[in-house]
Image (cartoon, rainbow, N blue to C red; front, top):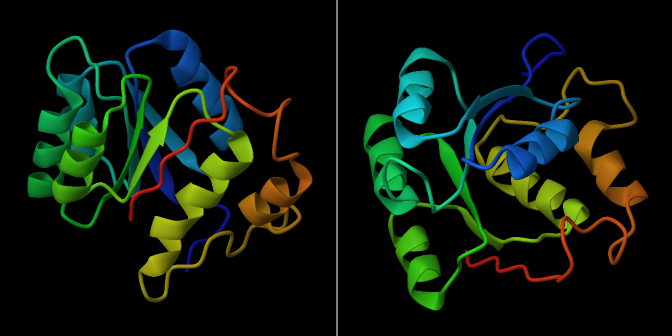
Length: 165
């Protein structure tokens, strides 16, 4: 059971400071966060910390995100991965799912959709419950319900989301 002091932990792997900081602002109230701006730093954090979920950009300065996805799954099969990319294609989406990603999301994305998508992999494991011990209006579920679905909550200008699970 997760408590307030034992929140689920997310590793945000994104080389661009703007999107990385935006994700951190959205997720910080609900998760313990770690950030990495390249694949090497991401693997170092993954080996050292208890990580439940990784948000992964496909374009990183030191290697391709798809290669990092494979390394993450080899190192920690239990860690869920959500690919978040501005350079999506059907092939990369299919590869991501084949290599173990739980979700494939295109930038810019809808914040409410992201929150709902993060909850899915964390809740599918038996005994895992989002927000246990979190008394802030039922955590992410309450936040997702309060956010409008279109327009003002998008991180960008086009509502392009692919969820291929």
